[in-house]
Image (cartoon, rainbow, N blue to C red; front, top):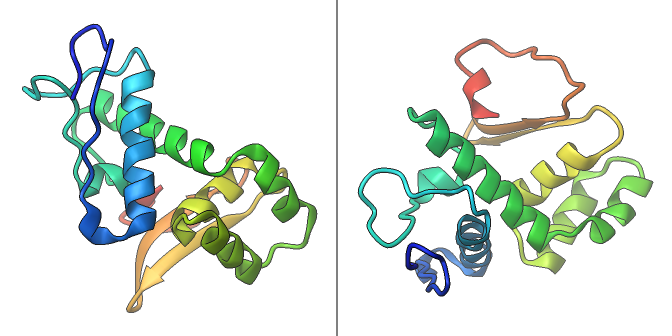
Length: 156
């Protein structure tokens, strides 16, 4: 919640989903507050009202809202996992166990750290997340070509 000039504000986060989600939510909402070109979508008087779909990067109908949510997510993970922490990961061979260990140390989700790792890596890499045999998310380096069917391509 904030005033129109963004001279002050308050962040509210659902704490029932664990520390990692709370940290990401706060960083995401801070991104909306600090990125001056972000404007609340719809009739959210006084601020942004993000839900799980916004934080999870689900596709939105409104292109402006989709862009803002993506930018807020990128801001959040860049804040929580600064470039200096990624150097150790990128200097070694790609190893999901090392990425998972760093996610634990930094108190961020494996999906968030994997996304940051892929997007900042110098080599073309991709990570596909699945749960119970279903793809839930995919992150690919800009140099990795699309190899998936169209119905999965929306999970970038």
